[in-house]
Image (cartoon, rainbow, N blue to C red):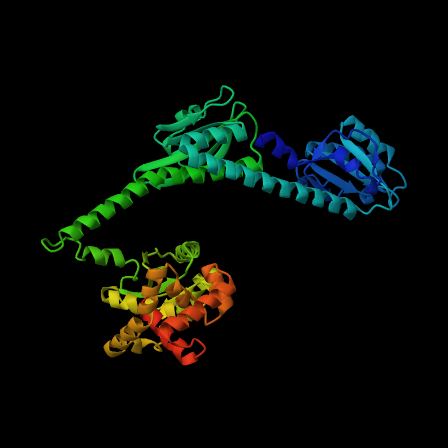
Length: 510
């Protein structure tokens, strides 16, 4: 359970400190206490500066001429809630003054001796490291508990979330509206968190706070407002809440907040989608009252309201790489506050419409993790109304011409001539003379020469890369290339021929 374990981790046992052999501490009175902090001080009465549960270290400078005052000193420290006293010998006093020992025993206060050769800073450092170690353990426990709460919220919604929280913090839990309406409640050891909500006026329930009543400890965690509804998460426990318990309750409240919003958000999104679909269906017959077309309303957030977008096409031979690239893009856009607009195209292409506000360098960076396996073609900024199939086809052709890991930016116009009608016709003719022959041969012999030529040309005429792409042996690759040369009556050792065939492969989407 969180409560007892974490409460102890926020204090250290004096017995543990006494067992640190390197410190050579000597027990004089009880050691069955726990302290929260180490505070060295030589003031005659430091009470107002001490924390409850403190371990006070001193050498007795203020008592050199009046050791009898130790009785008042111990009494003041005991009233201030001090847990223990460590007295350093060898400076002001050669041994621990009997008056101090007697006063500590009378007040039932822990007292130990710190030898002359042990500096106080050694004790401070030892305690600090132990607290740091325990804090690290707490963080690990916190992450584990958060994962457990998260899993409960996903698998069973609010009821499962509250049951898990109640079990982990040993407390009764309730999710309520501030008007007293109970959404869900989980009791614990006969306690019911809804009892405290019934006694609180709405304006008190609306405030996050901690308080206790009749030996019970309560936390009220305010959730965000949802329309006219205002919700709170309330917990009631038989013991004070540890720091970790407080953090876990706060985390559970944030999960409950999400779960309460989720049905509303999903339904609202579905309703908006239905409205847009209906407007598009009736667009030619009726005008809407929004002043914008359905498409304009869809693309307005994407284009920052000014109609401008930037089309981007990526290509990969791996569906997994494409899926990961889409996820990376979406994560980046989410951080920038933009939604994602994308669709798959035939041939391993993926089209994105991105906001024009994104610089081209940032777009490339979005895909950086997967860039070695991608071909990226970035289009020029234009109105979303001007995005056509021709726009997309041109970007696809550009992407296809790139080597894996290559990027073509909007100012790249090196392939624009490919889309001239005369060039297109010439390439179609050349395709019939080469790709057409290979396709006929493949059909008759059940071979795969078209795919082999395409892989070879797109791999920069590298046999090893093309073999890896097709998943075949290099010897098999060379045999196929020789057959291609025979069927098409050409030489693949001629760089001009290979360049010409690459353009054919690109434009004919082979």
